Length: 253
Image 1 (cartoon, rainbow, N blue to C red):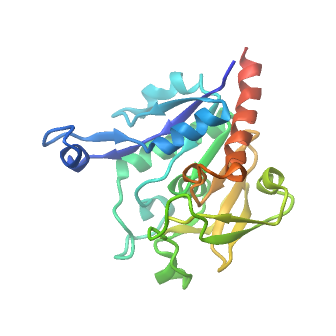
Image 2 (tube, helix red, strand yellow):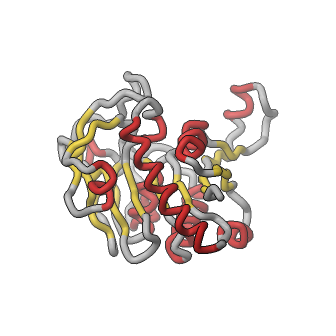
């Protein structure tokens, strides 16, 4: 039986998505997600389902108990309030409703030992959920290089990441360096409880972390492996998630 993988979605209270695409009318809010996440799960052998933002997120709990894996996806900036900081002019747009959704799903998956993968914003949410902090902008606050490389195709690798031996991420790739794409201006500043740094960029930005003490697979990556659709190497991340999710699925059945 194929494992069922819950995928979080973006939430936007503005009607821009519908109005620009001519799908909606003024005054609507939207739940939506890029197809790359869905196709990556499907390719790896999972059944993708989208987790919506609800007015009462606790209503989602009975369904989430049936999931075999979870992906916390990318999107808007994480609210600095969630990691004990004040918002500055360097922070991009925040969507508090989505922060609430993603943090709830992250804690639920961890507490119920559901294998979990965080991507870009999702990695940041996972770090914050366990006491980590963030750079609101890696250039302005950390003195790092520009990391939002939207002048290149989304599947194109733009820098190298050094992988830490002894981590689950190193086990996935089996080597010390990989090349990745990059579409972020925020990043993890410090990791929190039970969290181990698993990769850093060439200029020293934390690019991955592994969270222990919960599900068998609990990985956060700052780049976008789902966008690197031509890379068999990057697909290994989704393969590892699906493998861990199959084990959970088999235990249920």
